[in-house]
Amino acid sequence: DTTGYVEIPQLVRQKLLDIGYNSSAIGFDGASCGVSVSIGQQSSDIAAGVNQSLESRFGHVDPDLGAGDQGMMFGYASDETATYMPAPITMAHQLTQKLTELRREVGSMVLRPDGKAQVSIDYVDQRPVSVNTIVLSTQHHPDVTQEELANLVLDRVVKPVLTASGLDCDATRYIINPSGRFVIGGPQGDAGLTGRKIIVDTYGGMARHGGGAFSGKDPSKVDRSAAYAMRWVAKNLVAAGLAARAEIQVAYAIGVANPVSLYVETFGTETVEIGAIEQAVKSVFDLRPSAIISELDLKRPIYQASASYGHFGRELPDFTWERLDRVQALRDAAGK
Image 1: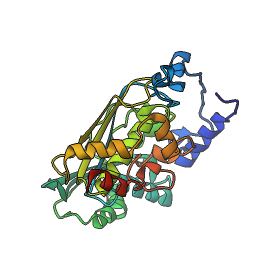
Image 2: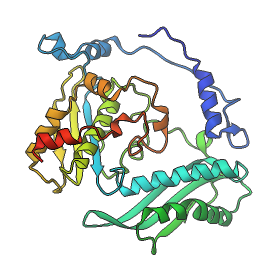
Image 3: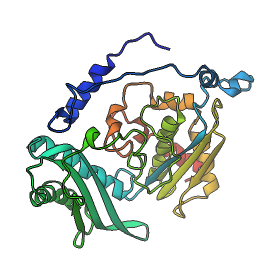
């Protein structure tokens, strides 16, 4: 419960303006658009199970928070990049970040806020070797020709990212704005993103996903907090040298603090027995929701940065799930 007051319409408008939606000519203007606010309290039935876990209600243990819902969450890490992320999604985020930098430099008379990227990379023996195809779409001013747009994006966005990748790009195929004209974009051209981009928010399809979106959920919802924790586990596991690739699956029941299952998949890259890895994870990490929230310090206003360029793979100060702080503990527990 809270008695605090937040000026939500003002925050929404300012964020729209910050993104670049600042004119009706673009199709959306944060200064003049309508903002509807509809916020209600959580169901008292759900709150009863979340605020006091099943274990606590029956006097078995004293975890103070039950899982906010049932579900499966996955975490993934690979040693193929310095950030322990898959190469395709890493490059896709680099492209969109570079595109944003270019848009802010050249202004809305050339580029506009909406845009996205997709990267296909060829692998040999589970290692990325060459960039097959780059697909990049960006909203633009109606007077910019497709040829001008393609040349600008290739020179200022795509080629710098490819050069820095160190991968073979000799035969890379470039597809810029394949639909042609892309003037109508953003909220004018689509119906929103929240909960609809769960793969680009995570690992770009390289790992499985439990289906629960992150955005709009506080950390009592394990869709968010446990997915962050699984990334934390997987990244530390790979950094510890226990496997070259790792996917961690956890499952919860609503109102129950302890996970109902934990599964480790290392795709044949493990350096010790899988059983030893699973036991090491269980002994090193406390995966009750209250412990996750405490260890990762998730009850803070830190989530704005995760709304673009993914939730994983960026070592920002507030992205505590990216810390490599359990590496030695995992090695010791696994007998590595």
